[in-house]
Amino acid sequence: MRRIWILVQNRRGIFLEPEVFYVKKDAINKKLRLLERSNPVYDEVEVFEKRIMTSEVRRSRRRT
Image 1 (tube, rainbow, N blue to C red):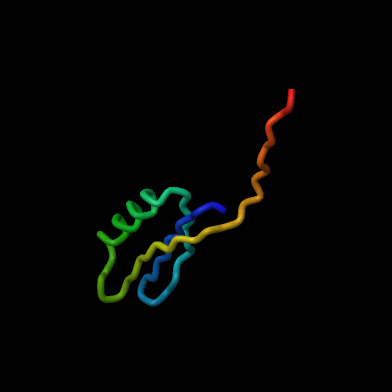
Image 2 (cartoon, one colour):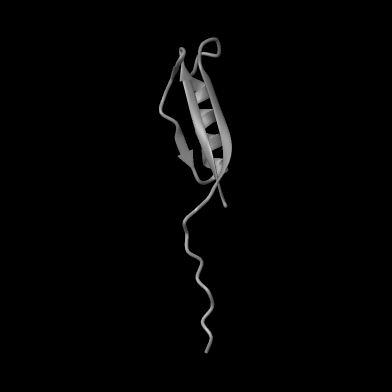
């Protein structure tokens, strides 16, 4: 399982394409930058955490 953070923007009732981050701090920083330019009456910005299954193959130790 891996954690990702999804940033969702709603500009005047229109949802924009979500952005995916692998580091929570990056998602929060982007949210704060967007909130500086947004109108609090109409716009919304939120970050959601999600756990996802990964297809990464785990390597086993070699026996020597």
